[in-house]
Image (cartoon, rainbow, N blue to C red):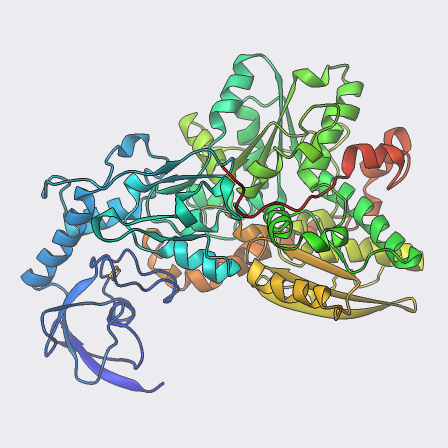
Length: 590
Ligand code: FES
Protein backbone atom coordinates (compact mmCIF):
# COMPACT_ATOMS: atom_id res chain seq x y z
CA UNK A 1 0.00 0.00 0.00
CA UNK A 2 1.20 3.53 -0.73
CA UNK A 3 1.58 6.41 1.68
CA UNK A 4 -0.93 9.22 2.14
CA UNK A 5 -0.94 12.58 3.94
CA UNK A 6 -3.16 13.27 6.92
CA UNK A 7 -3.23 15.80 9.74
CA UNK A 8 -3.83 15.07 13.41
CA UNK A 9 -4.49 18.12 15.61
CA UNK A 10 -3.28 20.23 12.66
CA UNK A 11 0.12 18.47 12.49
CA UNK A 12 0.93 16.81 9.12
CA UNK A 13 1.86 13.10 9.01
CA UNK A 14 2.53 10.59 6.26
CA UNK A 15 0.88 7.21 6.94
CA UNK A 16 0.13 3.98 5.12
CA UNK A 17 -3.08 3.97 3.15
CA UNK A 18 -5.55 1.34 4.35
CA UNK A 19 -4.99 1.87 8.07
CA UNK A 20 -7.86 2.79 10.33
CA UNK A 21 -7.67 6.16 12.08
CA UNK A 22 -6.99 4.30 15.35
CA UNK A 23 -4.01 2.44 13.85
CA UNK A 24 -2.64 5.48 12.02
CA UNK A 25 -2.92 7.66 15.13
CA UNK A 26 -0.97 5.09 17.18
CA UNK A 27 1.83 5.08 14.62
CA UNK A 28 1.93 8.88 14.87
CA UNK A 29 2.20 8.74 18.68
CA UNK A 30 -1.42 9.16 19.85
CA UNK A 31 -3.42 6.72 21.94
CA UNK A 32 -7.14 6.92 21.24
CA UNK A 33 -9.05 4.93 23.89
CA UNK A 34 -10.66 1.83 22.40
CA UNK A 35 -12.49 -1.17 23.75
CA UNK A 36 -14.33 -3.42 21.30
CA UNK A 37 -11.58 -3.22 18.63
CA UNK A 38 -9.08 -6.03 19.12
CA UNK A 39 -6.02 -7.58 17.54
CA UNK A 40 -5.63 -5.99 14.08
CA UNK A 41 -9.31 -6.22 13.22
CA UNK A 42 -9.96 -9.69 14.67
CA UNK A 43 -12.88 -7.90 16.30
CA UNK A 44 -14.04 -4.70 14.65
CA UNK A 45 -17.68 -4.26 15.57
CA UNK A 46 -17.46 -0.50 16.01
CA UNK A 47 -20.04 -1.03 18.74
CA UNK A 48 -18.68 0.56 21.90
CA UNK A 49 -18.08 4.09 20.50
CA UNK A 50 -15.23 4.62 22.95
CA UNK A 51 -12.85 5.56 20.13
CA UNK A 52 -14.82 8.50 18.66
CA UNK A 53 -12.85 11.32 16.98
CA UNK A 54 -13.74 14.33 14.85
CA UNK A 55 -12.90 14.23 11.17
CA UNK A 56 -13.24 17.24 8.91
CA UNK A 57 -15.73 16.59 6.16
CA UNK A 58 -17.38 13.67 7.99
CA UNK A 59 -20.82 14.21 9.41
CA UNK A 60 -20.30 14.29 13.16
CA UNK A 61 -17.96 11.95 15.02
CA UNK A 62 -16.60 8.68 13.64
CA UNK A 63 -15.49 5.44 15.29
CA UNK A 64 -11.75 5.55 14.63
CA UNK A 65 -11.36 1.76 14.89
CA UNK A 66 -13.39 1.14 11.72
CA UNK A 67 -12.97 4.42 9.78
CA UNK A 68 -10.06 4.32 7.30
CA UNK A 69 -7.65 7.22 6.78
CA UNK A 70 -7.79 9.00 3.42
CA UNK A 71 -5.67 11.56 1.58
CA UNK A 72 -5.92 15.01 3.14
CA UNK A 73 -7.95 13.83 6.14
CA UNK A 74 -7.85 16.11 9.21
CA UNK A 75 -8.45 14.36 12.51
CA UNK A 76 -9.17 15.90 15.89
CA UNK A 77 -8.68 13.62 18.87
CA UNK A 78 -8.60 16.27 21.59
CA UNK A 79 -11.42 18.59 20.54
CA UNK A 80 -13.92 19.19 23.41
CA UNK A 81 -16.61 17.49 21.33
CA UNK A 82 -14.52 14.30 20.84
CA UNK A 83 -13.37 14.17 24.46
CA UNK A 84 -16.91 14.57 25.74
CA UNK A 85 -18.31 11.97 23.32
CA UNK A 86 -15.74 9.34 24.35
CA UNK A 87 -16.44 10.00 28.03
CA UNK A 88 -20.20 9.73 27.44
CA UNK A 89 -19.72 6.38 25.66
CA UNK A 90 -17.81 4.94 28.62
CA UNK A 91 -20.30 6.40 31.12
CA UNK A 92 -23.16 4.75 29.22
CA UNK A 93 -21.35 1.40 29.41
CA UNK A 94 -20.73 1.90 33.14
CA UNK A 95 -24.40 2.75 33.73
CA UNK A 96 -25.37 -0.84 32.82
CA UNK A 97 -22.33 -2.51 34.40
CA UNK A 98 -22.09 -4.46 37.62
CA UNK A 99 -19.69 -2.30 39.58
CA UNK A 100 -18.63 -4.79 42.27
CA UNK A 101 -15.05 -4.34 41.08
CA UNK A 102 -13.47 -5.32 44.39
CA UNK A 103 -14.98 -8.82 44.07
CA UNK A 104 -14.06 -9.20 40.40
CA UNK A 105 -11.10 -11.42 39.49
CA UNK A 106 -10.41 -9.07 36.56
CA UNK A 107 -9.65 -6.24 39.02
CA UNK A 108 -6.37 -4.64 37.98
CA UNK A 109 -6.60 -5.99 34.43
CA UNK A 110 -10.02 -4.66 33.38
CA UNK A 111 -10.00 -2.72 30.13
CA UNK A 112 -13.28 -0.98 30.95
CA UNK A 113 -11.70 0.54 34.06
CA UNK A 114 -8.66 1.43 31.96
CA UNK A 115 -10.70 3.41 29.42
CA UNK A 116 -12.74 4.93 32.27
CA UNK A 117 -9.54 6.34 33.70
CA UNK A 118 -8.31 7.47 30.25
CA UNK A 119 -11.55 9.30 29.47
CA UNK A 120 -12.31 10.59 32.98
CA UNK A 121 -15.64 8.74 33.00
CA UNK A 122 -17.72 8.55 36.20
CA UNK A 123 -19.85 5.57 37.08
CA UNK A 124 -22.87 7.61 38.25
CA UNK A 125 -23.29 9.94 35.29
CA UNK A 126 -26.33 8.14 33.86
CA UNK A 127 -29.07 6.55 35.94
CA UNK A 128 -31.48 4.09 34.38
CA UNK A 129 -32.55 0.50 34.04
CA UNK A 130 -30.27 -2.55 34.02
CA UNK A 131 -30.45 -5.43 31.56
CA UNK A 132 -31.52 -8.82 32.90
CA UNK A 133 -28.50 -10.74 34.22
CA UNK A 134 -27.61 -14.23 32.96
CA UNK A 135 -25.04 -16.21 34.94
CA UNK A 136 -23.53 -19.63 34.12
CA UNK A 137 -21.41 -21.09 36.91
CA UNK A 138 -22.01 -24.80 36.41
CA UNK A 139 -19.28 -25.52 33.85
CA UNK A 140 -16.02 -26.66 35.51
CA UNK A 141 -13.96 -24.50 33.15
CA UNK A 142 -15.79 -21.26 32.52
CA UNK A 143 -18.00 -18.70 34.26
CA UNK A 144 -20.22 -16.30 32.30
CA UNK A 145 -21.71 -13.24 34.01
CA UNK A 146 -23.55 -10.90 31.66
CA UNK A 147 -23.78 -8.16 34.31
CA UNK A 148 -20.18 -7.36 33.39
CA UNK A 149 -20.51 -7.81 29.61
CA UNK A 150 -20.19 -4.77 27.35
CA UNK A 151 -21.33 -6.62 24.19
CA UNK A 152 -18.04 -5.94 22.42
CA UNK A 153 -18.23 -9.25 20.53
CA UNK A 154 -14.56 -10.18 20.97
CA UNK A 155 -15.43 -13.60 22.46
CA UNK A 156 -17.86 -14.30 19.63
CA UNK A 157 -15.18 -13.56 17.03
CA UNK A 158 -12.41 -15.48 18.85
CA UNK A 159 -14.50 -18.66 19.09
CA UNK A 160 -15.19 -18.46 15.34
CA UNK A 161 -11.61 -17.58 14.36
CA UNK A 162 -9.77 -20.08 16.53
CA UNK A 163 -12.10 -23.02 16.16
CA UNK A 164 -14.74 -22.25 13.56
CA UNK A 165 -17.17 -23.13 16.33
CA UNK A 166 -19.35 -20.11 17.02
CA UNK A 167 -20.44 -21.37 20.42
CA UNK A 168 -21.04 -17.83 21.65
CA UNK A 169 -23.42 -15.43 19.93
CA UNK A 170 -25.75 -12.51 20.62
CA UNK A 171 -29.17 -13.51 21.97
CA UNK A 172 -32.24 -11.23 21.94
CA UNK A 173 -32.35 -7.63 20.71
CA UNK A 174 -31.88 -4.07 21.93
CA UNK A 175 -31.50 -3.51 25.67
CA UNK A 176 -32.15 -7.23 26.29
CA UNK A 177 -29.20 -8.36 24.15
CA UNK A 178 -26.73 -10.68 25.87
CA UNK A 179 -23.92 -13.05 24.85
CA UNK A 180 -24.42 -16.78 25.42
CA UNK A 181 -24.20 -20.24 23.90
CA UNK A 182 -27.29 -21.07 21.80
CA UNK A 183 -30.57 -20.75 23.73
CA UNK A 184 -28.72 -19.45 26.78
CA UNK A 185 -27.45 -22.93 27.63
CA UNK A 186 -24.55 -23.49 30.00
CA UNK A 187 -21.14 -24.07 28.44
CA UNK A 188 -21.53 -27.55 29.91
CA UNK A 189 -24.73 -28.20 27.97
CA UNK A 190 -23.44 -27.11 24.58
CA UNK A 191 -20.57 -28.39 22.38
CA UNK A 192 -18.19 -25.82 23.90
CA UNK A 193 -14.69 -27.26 24.29
CA UNK A 194 -14.00 -24.93 27.27
CA UNK A 195 -10.58 -23.95 25.93
CA UNK A 196 -10.84 -20.47 27.45
CA UNK A 197 -9.84 -18.53 24.33
CA UNK A 198 -12.95 -16.39 24.91
CA UNK A 199 -11.69 -15.58 28.41
CA UNK A 200 -8.35 -14.51 26.96
CA UNK A 201 -9.98 -11.76 24.91
CA UNK A 202 -12.80 -10.61 27.23
CA UNK A 203 -12.01 -7.01 28.27
CA UNK A 204 -13.96 -7.26 31.55
CA UNK A 205 -14.83 -9.98 34.05
CA UNK A 206 -17.82 -11.23 32.02
CA UNK A 207 -15.99 -14.41 31.01
CA UNK A 208 -13.57 -15.94 33.49
CA UNK A 209 -12.13 -19.30 34.42
CA UNK A 210 -14.03 -21.10 37.19
CA UNK A 211 -11.57 -20.47 40.00
CA UNK A 212 -10.50 -23.38 42.21
CA UNK A 213 -8.39 -21.40 44.66
CA UNK A 214 -11.06 -21.94 47.35
CA UNK A 215 -10.74 -25.75 46.99
CA UNK A 216 -7.00 -25.52 47.64
CA UNK A 217 -7.57 -23.32 50.70
CA UNK A 218 -9.96 -25.97 52.08
CA UNK A 219 -7.48 -28.81 51.43
CA UNK A 220 -4.82 -26.95 53.43
CA UNK A 221 -7.30 -26.34 56.26
CA UNK A 222 -8.25 -30.04 56.33
CA UNK A 223 -4.58 -30.98 56.78
CA UNK A 224 -4.29 -32.89 53.49
CA UNK A 225 -0.93 -33.62 51.90
CA UNK A 226 -1.20 -30.88 49.26
CA UNK A 227 1.15 -31.58 46.36
CA UNK A 228 1.55 -29.19 43.42
CA UNK A 229 2.74 -29.85 39.89
CA UNK A 230 3.28 -27.13 37.26
CA UNK A 231 3.06 -27.53 33.47
CA UNK A 232 5.95 -26.52 31.19
CA UNK A 233 4.17 -23.53 29.59
CA UNK A 234 3.50 -21.87 32.97
CA UNK A 235 7.15 -21.00 33.61
CA UNK A 236 7.31 -19.25 30.24
CA UNK A 237 4.50 -16.81 31.06
CA UNK A 238 4.03 -16.42 34.84
CA UNK A 239 6.64 -13.62 34.90
CA UNK A 240 4.34 -11.46 32.75
CA UNK A 241 2.00 -11.15 35.75
CA UNK A 242 4.88 -9.61 37.71
CA UNK A 243 6.18 -7.16 35.10
CA UNK A 244 8.79 -9.32 33.37
CA UNK A 245 9.04 -8.92 29.57
CA UNK A 246 7.09 -11.51 27.59
CA UNK A 247 9.26 -14.59 26.97
CA UNK A 248 11.15 -14.44 30.29
CA UNK A 249 11.28 -17.90 31.90
CA UNK A 250 10.83 -17.70 35.69
CA UNK A 251 11.14 -21.38 36.64
CA UNK A 252 13.24 -20.92 39.81
CA UNK A 253 11.13 -18.08 41.22
CA UNK A 254 7.92 -19.97 40.47
CA UNK A 255 9.19 -22.98 42.44
CA UNK A 256 10.20 -20.69 45.33
CA UNK A 257 6.74 -19.08 45.31
CA UNK A 258 4.95 -22.46 45.29
CA UNK A 259 7.00 -23.55 48.29
CA UNK A 260 6.14 -20.34 50.15
CA UNK A 261 2.46 -20.95 49.43
CA UNK A 262 2.78 -24.06 51.60
CA UNK A 263 2.74 -26.97 49.14
CA UNK A 264 4.31 -30.10 50.64
CA UNK A 265 5.99 -31.08 47.37
CA UNK A 266 6.65 -29.01 44.26
CA UNK A 267 6.90 -31.11 41.11
CA UNK A 268 7.37 -30.40 37.44
CA UNK A 269 4.78 -31.88 35.06
CA UNK A 270 7.74 -32.44 32.75
CA UNK A 271 8.23 -35.77 34.51
CA UNK A 272 4.69 -36.67 33.48
CA UNK A 273 5.46 -35.44 29.95
CA UNK A 274 8.44 -37.82 29.73
CA UNK A 275 6.19 -40.61 30.97
CA UNK A 276 3.61 -39.72 28.31
CA UNK A 277 6.24 -39.99 25.60
CA UNK A 278 7.32 -43.42 26.83
CA UNK A 279 3.73 -44.64 26.72
CA UNK A 280 2.67 -42.80 23.55
CA UNK A 281 5.85 -43.61 21.60
CA UNK A 282 5.42 -47.30 22.45
CA UNK A 283 1.76 -47.17 21.48
CA UNK A 284 2.61 -45.54 18.12
CA UNK A 285 5.31 -48.10 17.27
CA UNK A 286 2.91 -50.87 18.25
CA UNK A 287 0.22 -49.50 15.94
CA UNK A 288 2.70 -49.08 13.03
CA UNK A 289 4.20 -52.57 13.37
CA UNK A 290 0.99 -54.47 14.29
CA UNK A 291 -1.38 -52.86 11.80
CA UNK A 292 -3.23 -50.80 14.43
CA UNK A 293 -5.49 -47.82 13.78
CA UNK A 294 -3.55 -45.05 12.02
CA UNK A 295 -3.02 -42.18 12.02
CA UNK A 296 -2.65 -42.11 15.76
CA UNK A 297 -3.56 -38.71 17.22
CA UNK A 298 -2.11 -37.20 20.40
CA UNK A 299 -4.41 -36.93 23.40
CA UNK A 300 -2.81 -34.47 25.81
CA UNK A 301 -4.96 -31.43 24.96
CA UNK A 302 -8.35 -31.67 26.73
CA UNK A 303 -9.91 -28.95 24.54
CA UNK A 304 -9.16 -31.15 21.54
CA UNK A 305 -10.54 -34.25 23.31
CA UNK A 306 -13.80 -32.36 24.00
CA UNK A 307 -13.98 -31.34 20.33
CA UNK A 308 -13.37 -34.92 19.15
CA UNK A 309 -16.04 -36.36 21.45
CA UNK A 310 -18.62 -33.79 20.32
CA UNK A 311 -17.84 -33.78 16.61
CA UNK A 312 -15.85 -36.84 15.52
CA UNK A 313 -17.16 -39.73 17.59
CA UNK A 314 -16.39 -42.07 14.68
CA UNK A 315 -12.66 -41.17 14.85
CA UNK A 316 -12.11 -41.79 18.57
CA UNK A 317 -10.17 -45.06 17.94
CA UNK A 318 -7.51 -42.85 16.33
CA UNK A 319 -6.81 -41.09 19.62
CA UNK A 320 -3.88 -42.30 21.68
CA UNK A 321 -5.18 -43.95 24.85
CA UNK A 322 -2.58 -42.06 26.92
CA UNK A 323 -3.78 -39.76 29.67
CA UNK A 324 -2.33 -36.25 29.54
CA UNK A 325 0.96 -35.63 31.42
CA UNK A 326 -0.49 -34.03 34.58
CA UNK A 327 -3.11 -36.77 34.88
CA UNK A 328 -0.43 -39.44 34.50
CA UNK A 329 1.71 -37.74 37.11
CA UNK A 330 -1.28 -37.34 39.47
CA UNK A 331 -1.92 -41.10 39.15
CA UNK A 332 1.74 -41.82 39.96
CA UNK A 333 1.63 -39.48 42.98
CA UNK A 334 -1.45 -41.25 44.37
CA UNK A 335 0.05 -44.72 43.81
CA UNK A 336 3.87 -44.97 43.67
CA UNK A 337 4.65 -41.79 45.63
CA UNK A 338 1.95 -42.59 48.23
CA UNK A 339 3.37 -46.10 48.64
CA UNK A 340 6.95 -44.82 48.98
CA UNK A 341 5.88 -42.27 51.60
CA UNK A 342 3.42 -44.56 53.37
CA UNK A 343 0.51 -42.17 52.88
CA UNK A 344 -3.13 -43.08 52.24
CA UNK A 345 -3.95 -41.81 48.70
CA UNK A 346 -7.23 -40.44 50.06
CA UNK A 347 -5.24 -37.97 52.19
CA UNK A 348 -3.38 -36.60 49.17
CA UNK A 349 -4.67 -33.50 47.33
CA UNK A 350 -2.99 -32.95 43.95
CA UNK A 351 -3.04 -29.45 42.44
CA UNK A 352 -2.05 -28.83 38.82
CA UNK A 353 -0.97 -25.37 37.65
CA UNK A 354 -1.91 -25.25 33.99
CA UNK A 355 -1.91 -22.80 31.07
CA UNK A 356 -5.30 -24.25 30.25
CA UNK A 357 -8.93 -23.88 31.29
CA UNK A 358 -10.06 -27.18 29.72
CA UNK A 359 -7.84 -29.07 32.20
CA UNK A 360 -10.40 -28.10 34.85
CA UNK A 361 -12.96 -30.08 32.88
CA UNK A 362 -10.56 -32.93 32.10
CA UNK A 363 -9.75 -33.73 35.73
CA UNK A 364 -13.48 -34.41 36.38
CA UNK A 365 -13.71 -37.19 33.75
CA UNK A 366 -14.99 -40.45 35.19
CA UNK A 367 -12.78 -42.40 32.74
CA UNK A 368 -9.65 -41.02 34.41
CA UNK A 369 -10.37 -42.22 37.94
CA UNK A 370 -8.22 -44.91 39.54
CA UNK A 371 -9.84 -46.87 42.40
CA UNK A 372 -12.57 -44.22 42.59
CA UNK A 373 -10.08 -41.38 43.13
CA UNK A 374 -9.38 -38.47 40.81
CA UNK A 375 -5.75 -38.28 39.67
CA UNK A 376 -5.88 -34.51 40.18
CA UNK A 377 -8.08 -32.67 42.67
CA UNK A 378 -7.78 -29.03 41.60
CA UNK A 379 -6.54 -27.22 38.51
CA UNK A 380 -5.55 -23.56 38.61
CA UNK A 381 -4.47 -21.46 35.66
CA UNK A 382 -1.29 -19.41 35.39
CA UNK A 383 -3.44 -16.37 36.18
CA UNK A 384 -4.90 -17.99 39.31
CA UNK A 385 -1.43 -18.90 40.54
CA UNK A 386 -0.40 -15.25 40.13
CA UNK A 387 -3.46 -14.22 42.18
CA UNK A 388 -2.52 -16.68 44.94
CA UNK A 389 1.04 -15.33 45.03
CA UNK A 390 -0.15 -11.71 45.14
CA UNK A 391 -2.73 -12.26 47.90
CA UNK A 392 -0.07 -14.00 50.04
CA UNK A 393 2.17 -10.95 50.00
CA UNK A 394 5.02 -12.81 48.33
CA UNK A 395 7.35 -10.39 46.53
CA UNK A 396 7.81 -12.57 43.47
CA UNK A 397 10.55 -10.49 41.85
CA UNK A 398 12.71 -10.75 44.99
CA UNK A 399 12.45 -14.52 45.33
CA UNK A 400 15.58 -16.65 44.95
CA UNK A 401 15.70 -19.29 42.23
CA UNK A 402 14.91 -22.68 43.75
CA UNK A 403 14.88 -26.27 42.42
CA UNK A 404 12.02 -28.75 42.00
CA UNK A 405 11.69 -31.44 44.65
CA UNK A 406 14.01 -34.20 43.53
CA UNK A 407 12.56 -37.31 45.15
CA UNK A 408 11.17 -39.81 42.62
CA UNK A 409 9.90 -37.24 40.09
CA UNK A 410 12.59 -34.55 39.92
CA UNK A 411 14.36 -35.35 36.65
CA UNK A 412 13.06 -34.32 33.27
CA UNK A 413 14.29 -34.10 29.71
CA UNK A 414 14.36 -31.24 27.19
CA UNK A 415 11.81 -33.21 25.19
CA UNK A 416 9.30 -32.75 28.00
CA UNK A 417 9.85 -28.98 28.19
CA UNK A 418 8.77 -28.37 24.59
CA UNK A 419 5.35 -29.97 25.16
CA UNK A 420 4.15 -26.42 25.77
CA UNK A 421 4.48 -25.27 22.15
CA UNK A 422 2.69 -26.58 19.08
CA UNK A 423 4.81 -29.34 17.51
CA UNK A 424 6.51 -30.05 20.83
CA UNK A 425 4.70 -33.29 21.67
CA UNK A 426 5.36 -34.55 18.16
CA UNK A 427 9.08 -33.66 18.34
CA UNK A 428 9.45 -35.21 21.80
CA UNK A 429 7.81 -38.43 20.59
CA UNK A 430 9.96 -38.53 17.44
CA UNK A 431 13.17 -38.33 19.49
CA UNK A 432 12.16 -41.53 21.30
CA UNK A 433 10.65 -43.25 18.24
CA UNK A 434 13.93 -42.58 16.37
CA UNK A 435 15.88 -44.26 19.16
CA UNK A 436 13.55 -47.24 19.30
CA UNK A 437 13.71 -47.77 15.51
CA UNK A 438 17.46 -47.25 15.09
CA UNK A 439 18.90 -48.21 18.49
CA UNK A 440 20.85 -44.93 18.56
CA UNK A 441 20.20 -41.27 19.31
CA UNK A 442 19.56 -38.83 16.46
CA UNK A 443 22.70 -36.72 16.10
CA UNK A 444 20.90 -33.48 15.39
CA UNK A 445 18.25 -33.77 18.05
CA UNK A 446 15.99 -31.03 16.64
CA UNK A 447 13.18 -31.92 14.25
CA UNK A 448 12.93 -28.50 12.60
CA UNK A 449 10.21 -29.73 10.25
CA UNK A 450 7.61 -29.69 13.02
CA UNK A 451 8.70 -26.51 14.81
CA UNK A 452 6.68 -23.30 14.92
CA UNK A 453 4.46 -21.25 17.17
CA UNK A 454 1.58 -20.30 14.90
CA UNK A 455 -1.80 -21.86 14.37
CA UNK A 456 -2.38 -23.81 11.17
CA UNK A 457 -1.17 -27.11 9.75
CA UNK A 458 2.43 -28.30 9.37
CA UNK A 459 3.48 -31.64 7.94
CA UNK A 460 6.66 -33.65 7.36
CA UNK A 461 7.77 -36.99 6.02
CA UNK A 462 10.62 -38.59 7.94
CA UNK A 463 12.75 -41.53 6.88
CA UNK A 464 13.85 -43.30 10.05
CA UNK A 465 16.09 -46.28 9.30
CA UNK A 466 14.10 -47.17 6.20
CA UNK A 467 10.72 -46.65 7.90
CA UNK A 468 8.77 -43.69 6.53
CA UNK A 469 6.84 -41.81 9.19
CA UNK A 470 4.43 -39.19 7.83
CA UNK A 471 3.44 -36.66 10.46
CA UNK A 472 1.20 -33.62 10.66
CA UNK A 473 0.16 -31.20 13.32
CA UNK A 474 -2.54 -28.63 13.87
CA UNK A 475 -3.48 -26.23 16.62
CA UNK A 476 -6.90 -24.65 16.92
CA UNK A 477 -9.93 -26.68 15.82
CA UNK A 478 -10.36 -24.78 12.56
CA UNK A 479 -7.06 -26.31 11.34
CA UNK A 480 -7.62 -29.67 13.02
CA UNK A 481 -10.91 -30.09 11.14
CA UNK A 482 -9.05 -30.24 7.81
CA UNK A 483 -6.90 -33.17 8.99
CA UNK A 484 -9.86 -34.92 10.62
CA UNK A 485 -12.04 -34.66 7.51
CA UNK A 486 -9.22 -36.24 5.48
CA UNK A 487 -9.18 -39.21 7.86
CA UNK A 488 -12.96 -39.49 7.69
CA UNK A 489 -12.80 -39.54 3.88
CA UNK A 490 -10.05 -42.17 3.91
CA UNK A 491 -7.54 -39.77 2.32
CA UNK A 492 -5.11 -39.29 5.21
CA UNK A 493 -1.50 -40.25 4.46
CA UNK A 494 -0.24 -39.71 8.00
CA UNK A 495 0.93 -42.10 10.68
CA UNK A 496 0.98 -39.63 13.54
CA UNK A 497 -0.88 -36.35 14.11
CA UNK A 498 -0.48 -33.86 16.94
CA UNK A 499 -3.53 -31.73 17.73
CA UNK A 500 -3.56 -28.90 20.25
CA UNK A 501 -6.79 -27.18 21.24
CA UNK A 502 -5.47 -23.62 21.42
CA UNK A 503 -3.89 -21.85 18.42
CA UNK A 504 -0.11 -21.99 19.01
CA UNK A 505 -0.42 -24.64 21.74
CA UNK A 506 -0.18 -24.24 25.52
CA UNK A 507 1.92 -21.06 25.37
CA UNK A 508 -1.30 -19.46 24.11
CA UNK A 509 -3.61 -21.46 26.37
CA UNK A 510 -6.87 -20.09 27.71
CA UNK A 511 -5.43 -19.82 31.23
CA UNK A 512 -2.37 -17.77 30.32
CA UNK A 513 -1.77 -14.10 31.29
CA UNK A 514 -3.77 -11.61 29.26
CA UNK A 515 -1.84 -9.93 26.44
CA UNK A 516 -3.04 -6.34 26.02
CA UNK A 517 -0.96 -3.68 24.31
CA UNK A 518 -2.78 -1.03 26.41
CA UNK A 519 -1.15 -2.42 29.58
CA UNK A 520 2.31 -2.86 28.05
CA UNK A 521 5.10 -0.37 27.37
CA UNK A 522 5.18 1.49 24.03
CA UNK A 523 7.85 -0.73 22.48
CA UNK A 524 5.40 -3.61 22.65
CA UNK A 525 3.04 -2.08 20.05
CA UNK A 526 3.31 -5.17 17.87
CA UNK A 527 2.90 -7.55 20.75
CA UNK A 528 -0.15 -9.28 19.29
CA UNK A 529 2.09 -10.45 16.42
CA UNK A 530 5.06 -11.54 18.50
CA UNK A 531 4.02 -12.79 21.93
CA UNK A 532 3.58 -16.45 20.92
CA UNK A 533 7.04 -16.55 19.34
CA UNK A 534 8.61 -14.96 22.43
CA UNK A 535 6.93 -17.43 24.77
CA UNK A 536 7.91 -20.39 22.54
CA UNK A 537 11.56 -19.29 22.59
CA UNK A 538 11.55 -19.44 26.40
CA UNK A 539 10.70 -23.17 26.16
CA UNK A 540 13.04 -24.03 23.29
CA UNK A 541 15.93 -22.38 25.16
CA UNK A 542 15.20 -24.49 28.26
CA UNK A 543 15.30 -27.62 26.06
CA UNK A 544 18.75 -26.57 24.79
CA UNK A 545 20.03 -26.12 28.34
CA UNK A 546 19.06 -29.64 29.43
CA UNK A 547 21.75 -32.32 29.51
CA UNK A 548 19.09 -35.00 29.01
CA UNK A 549 17.00 -34.23 25.94
CA UNK A 550 15.12 -37.47 25.29
CA UNK A 551 12.39 -38.87 27.53
CA UNK A 552 13.80 -42.43 27.45
CA UNK A 553 17.06 -41.16 28.99
CA UNK A 554 15.39 -39.68 32.09
CA UNK A 555 16.90 -41.80 34.94
CA UNK A 556 13.88 -41.42 37.23
CA UNK A 557 11.56 -42.54 34.42
CA UNK A 558 13.76 -45.64 34.00
CA UNK A 559 13.58 -46.22 37.78
CA UNK A 560 9.78 -45.85 37.77
CA UNK A 561 9.49 -48.62 35.17
CA UNK A 562 12.06 -50.83 36.92
CA UNK A 563 10.56 -50.43 40.39
CA UNK A 564 6.86 -50.07 39.74
CA UNK A 565 5.34 -50.07 36.27
CA UNK A 566 7.32 -52.85 34.60
CA UNK A 567 7.53 -51.63 31.02
CA UNK A 568 5.76 -49.08 28.80
CA UNK A 569 2.18 -50.15 27.95
CA UNK A 570 2.32 -52.89 30.65
CA UNK A 571 -0.88 -53.95 32.41
CA UNK A 572 -0.09 -51.70 35.37
CA UNK A 573 0.78 -48.79 33.08
CA UNK A 574 -2.57 -49.23 31.33
CA UNK A 575 -4.41 -49.28 34.65
CA UNK A 576 -2.86 -46.01 35.81
CA UNK A 577 -1.82 -44.08 32.71
CA UNK A 578 -4.31 -44.84 29.94
CA UNK A 579 -7.94 -43.92 29.39
CA UNK A 580 -10.97 -44.24 27.10
CA UNK A 581 -13.20 -41.81 25.19
CA UNK A 582 -16.89 -41.70 24.34
CA UNK A 583 -18.91 -39.73 21.79
CA UNK A 584 -21.01 -37.03 23.44
CA UNK A 585 -24.32 -35.45 22.55
CA UNK A 586 -23.82 -31.88 21.33
CA UNK A 587 -27.00 -30.54 22.92
CA UNK A 588 -28.03 -32.95 25.69
CA UNK A 589 -31.52 -32.73 27.15
CA UNK A 590 -31.53 -30.58 30.26
FE1 FES B 1 -14.06 1.65 18.26
FE2 FES B 1 -15.32 0.21 20.07
S1 FES B 1 -13.22 0.60 19.91
S2 FES B 1 -16.18 1.42 18.49
